[in-house]
Image 1 (cartoon, rainbow, N blue to C red):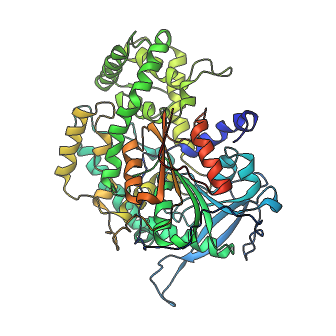
Image 2 (cartoon, rainbow, N blue to C red; image 1 turned 60 degrees about the vertical axis):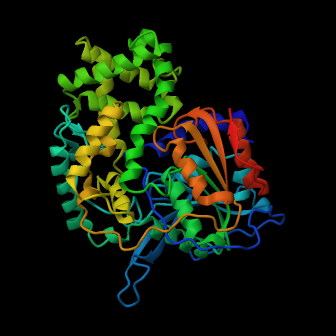
Image 3 (tube, rainbow, N blue to C red; image 1 turned 90 degrees about the horizontal axis):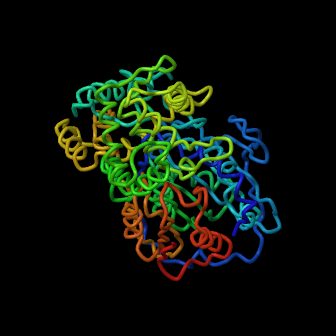
Length: 537
């Protein structure tokens, strides 16, 4: 297990990998029943370092050594035959095992999203124990369509991320519940994506990304690889294992999606997940009552939070430093985002008021018409930084947001009837007021130009017990019931470790649960899984 001095300064570096664009979707492809000698036994002899034709050099992201990067060509369409086939570029990264004499092989990493993962070896590598970093090459890549791997472009410029003064991340309906503006926007973005990236869109499936992973494995000269993936990366890992069960050694998936709740239904889970997380936030509001002014009890905090967001819906505010309108949806969006990690609930020497306390204080003061310059400056900075963080230099400005749609659309068809979204948005606004119906609302996938070419592969038992599932009990994005769905799909192949904690990601929690992290470290180092499912308090 990692030491405290090994773990502390790294938490800040990893947080950037968890910023989301309201996306946690992915896909799969046919599972093969596989009964063979288990890959989970401990490797006793050191493995030779990866050799390949990849030309390793500096990373286009500017990531520091020891991370290296290289380009790999893969087929755009794995079904096409030459000369009709076309290749696209995949950008791959690695940090070689720190102690080659102890090397066990390759540990592939994915940071979720779906989003850019090229720098995950640097960001997540620091969260892994020293023994793991000594023993594995850490390898990652930007999935097809994303970042430095042949990116898609849907034609939005950075300043267009704010439309009608609303941040275009989740599809929040208007204050009266209307989704008409969301429908018009979704039509326009689906058309733009088709016009600018139509040749790529049918092939941006999770299954094809898994096939790209296996090309990377083969190019590295590895017979098998181990894997750690978070959020959407759990689905990618499960699909890779369904397609290539014989090529997986040890797999850890953290904060799982449910492989049987895909596409639109995957998005709808956000509303219930935020309700799961809320008790932690309500307790926080009570503890910070002198800062956020939302009441003395958890019931008061909820009632006053809902009243504050409703008042900002009625009387939204515009600030001179940003195009984003500060309304109830603004507070809802960033409350959800900040709830991903307990770090945002914690004050530090450099920031004596935590991020969430600053947001709630500013929202409360704004709703009460007594906002200070500090409040206004904070909200302006939050809005502008969010947009800037979603744009990678030298790439289409909308790439990180648009690929979330593109992969979900390619994996599974969304409903086409607008009445479905109107009905579900209204129902979820009433049942889950914290998210105001946004996760159930219409999106560009509702009008996508192409339909999935193949059925999603089925995640199921392949006859090898080699998967460890880590899951926080109160996750605002991938709820516990989703991890239970992943465990049910994999059956006895997987062990579920449930952690009594809030937030998205067990490994990236500011104070990682020692019970869960010990189980992960022991598995990667010895190949030994817990005897059965665990609950870690």
